[in-house]
Length: 290
Image (tube, rainbow, N blue to C red; front, side):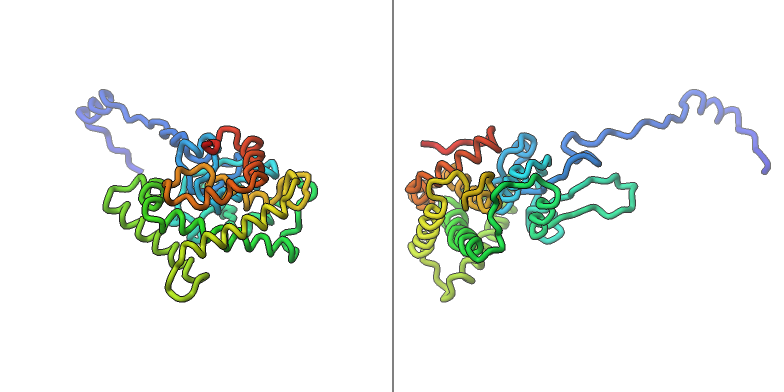
């Protein structure tokens, strides 16, 4: 190959301004660390994610608590449903890999978290078999009656919807976008409730009465035990109940729309159950106001 001489004026320019290769900029502090601990993507704030505080979403908090029960080290990452492979939070990435690697990320959706935790976590003593008929009955009370009342209280009670739901789920958006997102979440909550209450009409008295009956049954099954079903350690059902009782007891409900808070306060053993989990596994979390 013939080498051409560099013109003297160009050589002088290069000598005055040498070409330098600068090191890559560091990743943001909150960016997940490759190859470290699993990352659980949940509804939360950046501040609460850094401190490991409870998510403000029951579905996310359930798995956050269960991971802690099983002594699995993990980090929480603020996210939203649009970022989830299944369209819903939570989901977990069990191990981060650099973008240069071609291997697929180990993404675990919520419906596979229990199996992953059972395989990788601490063996809990006396945990109830969640596939048993008895456990399924009580889990239905949580996932149907209690969840239904939660959806109504947070999204369809007008003051709670504006003061709580908007702040929690739409707070970082501009006004027009925030209003649109709030309408979407309210419509989704209403649709879920109508599936359980056919007829096109939602009666809050019926919804809260169903939740009160569920709480009474859940309180009865706990009785004077520390954990549900007599377990020596808290299990998945404990996490499922805590996910609702903690949020219901700690959110600032409107004074005329706090039926769920009042319902839980009638059962001292459920209040104590929430306190035990909060103090043992979320020591920095907010305590219920007297």
